[in-house]
Length: 173
Image (tube, helix red, strand yellow):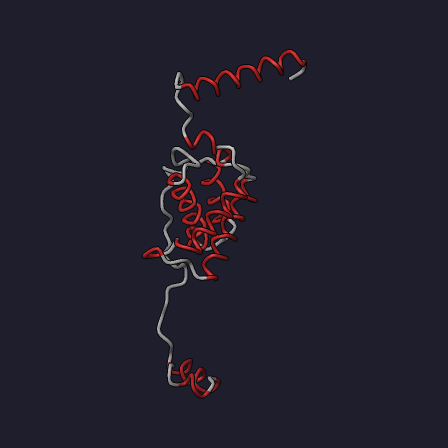
């Protein structure tokens, strides 16, 4: 504030609100209100730590590789969208980034997995009172069909594979 008087006035108001909450005259703010300005960097770190401990199926932790992929994906979103807190996140920016990446030739499966990681972070953040509602609620699923359909090997390809495969691996092929 530009003057000492305005600063003191604001401090007095904050003190009065805190006193009113303590005395029961005023309702305490919701947990998400207290956490809403938490830096996304620390929320991501907490989410990844939780995931490695108990975030998988049947409350088992993620394996090391999955944890690294989730963290990298969330850091990618944070950097691409310039996110500091959840307040910076909105559906339009995420959809625009997805369209841009697909237009550049990124695989739909890759972008879909990154979007799913972001949606999972938000679901976790809602349960842990970092956000009240999902800012990506309207985000639709991407078509994850492979651009190059799978096909069976030709006889020549199988023969070439068996020629160069290590001895114990030939059994698998």
